[in-house]
Amino acid sequence: MRAFIVVDVTVHDPVRYEDYKRMAGPTVSAFDGRYVVRGGKTETLEGDWHPGRAVVLEFPSTQRAKEWWSSEEYRPAKELRQSIATTQMVIFEGM
Image 1: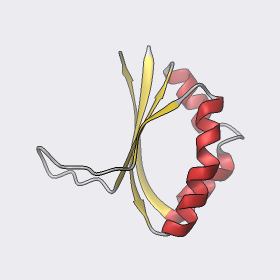
Image 2: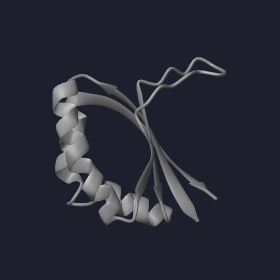
Image 3: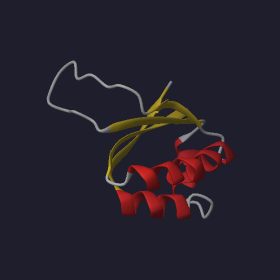
Image 4: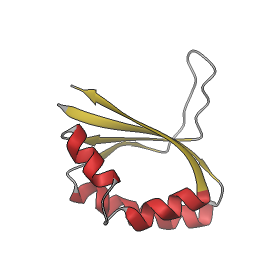
């Protein structure tokens, strides 16, 4: 079953975040993932959630998504992101 990682990012350093995006992209692909949403305008339809930068990743399975997130390939990008942004990240199984 496919897995989707949904991310709400509040970027504190936009210049260095561009470095993160360049670093992260190839690692997503290396683990058979793809970006479904990467930035772009958001609009709240219900509730009080107002995401900063929205990102949705799709992987072929939860296992593959977790392998990416914990991988040595992604580690440098993840450490950079964690130092320049506040992130909320969840994983969902879906069709």
